[in-house]
Each structure stands twice: as structure tokens, then as C-alpha cells.
Amino acid sequence: MVQRGLQRALDRPDDLWETAFTEYLDDAGRLLLYCLACEPGNAKVAAEDFVRASKAAGITAGDQFFRRVLEVLDGTFLRVFLYRDGRPRWIQFHNPSIREFVLRKLCHDRASLRALMETAESATVFVVIWQVLIDDDQADPAIAYAVRPAFQNGLKRVAETATERPTALWLAVQLSATWSPGRAWLEETVERCIQ
Image 1 (tube, rainbow, N blue to C red):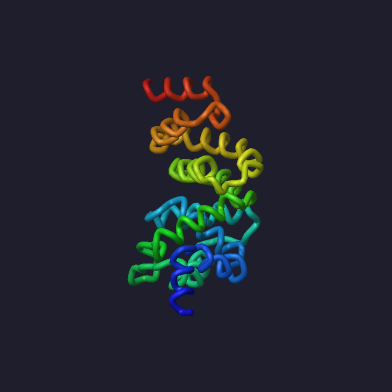
Image 2 (cartoon, rainbow, N blue to C red):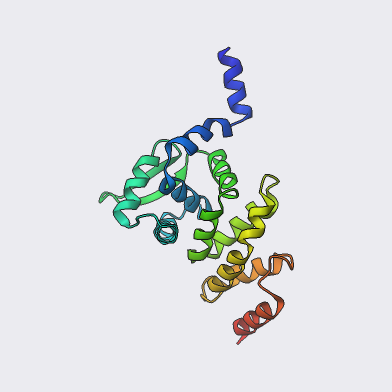
């Protein structure tokens, strides 16, 4: 009996996380996991993304709030390594299957997708979201269609930042005509890079 349960958990790891994710985490906890999944290994950027996305989603935000939410997730979904002063130094998912689970949940959460895309300052977020929405066979096409304008506008906004422009342009070239911000925008942005 125990062996069968263990084998089932290994074969279907999402079952391990579903209840905790949907029933025990609040919107802030889920949003923080989404931010961390979209900015793997970069706790500082994920924290900044979380504060901005929280405000866009109507959730109370701030540095202390981030730390409180992080404390709830530490030891379950995440491992948090702190500096001596208590600031997060490194945050990682306990294992890759948890991050994959969180990304699959994100592709079904229209409000969080919009909040992330409207506030993200890193092109990495758009690369991850594009991979989840387009490449994941479990993504909901209706949600993907609904958030496409936010994706296009966010990618344009991020491409205005010189440090993010190369990644944003790379992604724009990879996109189908349906997802691309437009050929004219792409040509104009490339021209600015060359000058």
C-alpha cells in the first residue's frame, strides 16, 4: 500500500502540490511563486517583480510583506538562504518539478499573467511566459488569447530598456505573427540598436 502510494506520487508529482497550492496559499503566496518561477535564481529581481505585480493585482505589497510571504513558502515549495541581516540571498524551488508545476498553474491564472506582464522589467519573464503559453500542451488557448495584448505591450515596454533589448528582440523574432508586437515595431527597435 505504501509502495503504491509512493509510486503514484513519483509518477504524478503535481498531486503532491495541488492541495497545498490551491487550498493553503493565498493570492500573494501564489503570485510570489509565479514571480520566482519566471525569474529563476534571481531573488532580487523576483522580489521587485513581486512588489510591482502585487500592486497591479490589488494585493498589499512592500519589502516586509515580501519577507512575510517568503517565510510562509520557505520549507515547503522553496528553500530560502538568507544574509545575516535577514534579507534573502538565494531562493530556489525544492526541486524542478515544483517550478514546472507552478508554471503550469500560471498558464491558467489570467489575472496573475496580466499583472506580471504589465509590471515585469525583465525580458526573461516574457521568455518564460511565452514558453509556458505556447509550448505547454496544458495551456488554455482562451487565456493565451486574452493575455496576448498585455504580452505584446509588455514586451515593447521592456525592449525600451537598453539592457533588456537584446533578449526582447530575440524573443520578438522567435514569435509568430500572432504574438509579435509587429514587424514595424521590430524594425524600428532593431534600427535603434544599430545606431
